[in-house]
Length: 488
Image (cartoon, rainbow, N blue to C red; front, top):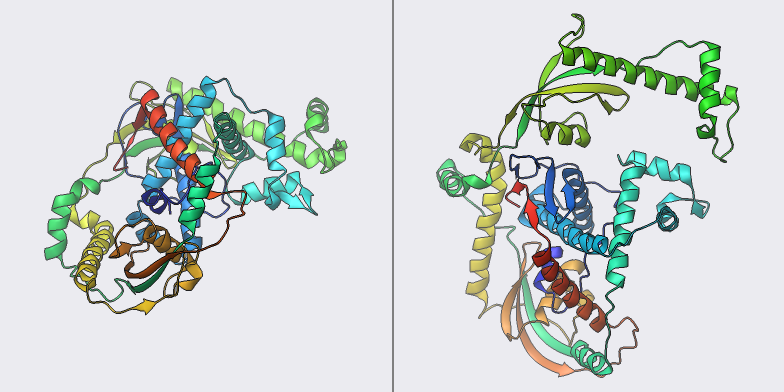
């Protein structure tokens, strides 16, 4: 979608993407390969704003969900790769980071009150028509998000909006008249949709091996970390009534019911015990960490060796990021909480990225090779058929008449029409992001006599898009950008 929007930016309007949490995930993917160094835990850095692997994963998942909806559930990782979804996700975040840097330079900030007001507009947190804090926590928990992470995204969204609001777009009457004329252009066309469904590709080793030789730098292993770790399982202790009561008295303002009232001791007892267990678990982990650091670890403490990477990470993003920032001179990490257990990690060695062997890369190469070959053959078919094709004919249509184009999904039809009304060629073909190609021949053209009474005239969005593109280019010259993942 973003690639398409960029390709047809003259007629389709895109403002800088503002992060919104989509509660549909595509799961985690293996990002390119990390450039080994101090910033291996980040995906990129723009000015003073770092883009984390977690942010990249989340943005990718949001984009994946949008494409999946557009393709009515028929979107997969193969299509995601062919559309360059990883690069799209990173570009979104880097564009955001440019504007965030600008906002920070203006000393703009977002208050907790503003964040709360924005949260109260999210209907998926509503109960009986109003924002419900417990529903809020439950929804985030089910989607593996913390309130801190989600509210940080809200803050970023609001800061971007505040920054862009300082740069208003004005529109003149002449511009409105011009866009009205453009929107009233109507074409009568003949068109034919061709796809690669019936195109076969030779996938023998004899054809795949040369492709791998030519492109093997694109098929790299991921950075891996060999580590030792000590796990401190959750402690379930037995506590005297006096200890429970003391903790309750010291912390009761944090022990409230759903109405915000402080729970009585009996009602809070289970929570108090859970808190005491958590504290005991943390204290035990810290004691073990100190013993390990001093070389005085008890002989009955189990030290396990494992390898962790982006695709093999049973812990958390926080763990991987922390490990990636260790070094041979400082290899030991303080205990990190994962679920309800603590882990102490020590880096043994970093295994840098390297070119995969043909056999290891074959499964990854195959779909890319097949898609490339099909695209090439389909393009050749379109070129050879252009002058002689016979297809369906339409009445006079504008770029708003996607419902009058058959054999295409609505999103595909919109994509086709936006490209059609941007071209100067009477006969040609248009490649769609779905992989299909539409051959067309413009039979007649005329100007309709419709009046656009929409107050949100497209010229505003067009100028906004062009302005934002110019803004981004300007900010790219102002703020240094670094990408720490190869291939993106």
